[in-house]
Image 1 (cartoon, rainbow, N blue to C red):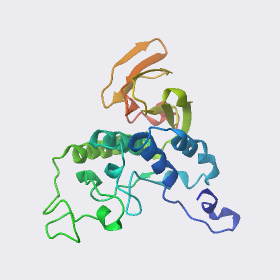
Image 2: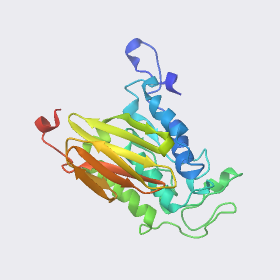
Image 3: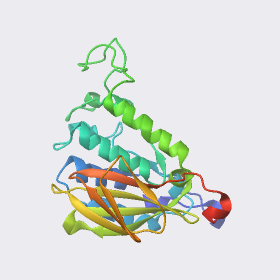
Image 4: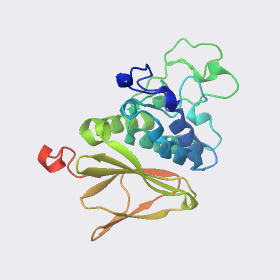
Length: 247
């Protein structure tokens, strides 16, 4: 899709942005299938192929109407869904949430209608679950609410650039750096079955989200990433003064 994104400054017409299928399939492999980071790494490495004006508007998702729901993938469960959503909301671009994902709809495979369940009472085609499924108290709904609050709180997450900071696929580790002026944040994924001790050299106070075990040793920050997990490292001050941020 990258060649189809281009600005109009060169006189040629192109898409302002596209569905970010490469990121979606990378996350679905890493957390819903075999744990491979190959596609996710390729998605991040290939970002420069897109027109730079399109990157802030790429539509990031973990499932939609054209693919099986995330929870229908062979290794997926609600915990892994939370991790995939955390990575998606931490990335540059626009988070695209397919209805029912926030309700942990399981979907199915083989028939398109299995991924188009009815949200409210009335049902549709062999629909499951039956009845009214809209619930604002569920774990996934509340997790997404917290992620959207983070996006509102941190201009860095909404407006910052993104680059692949570290790719250690042998350890099942990828780290993405978010950049806005002098501010930095990090999106980290461990797709493996063992915890990882990740060490980053940072020059500002960062906090993990969700909570994780950390240790500061001078400029080195140690963080323990549980198996099949995603963590954000965010500045303590979400909105620094413009002069402090270097903007």
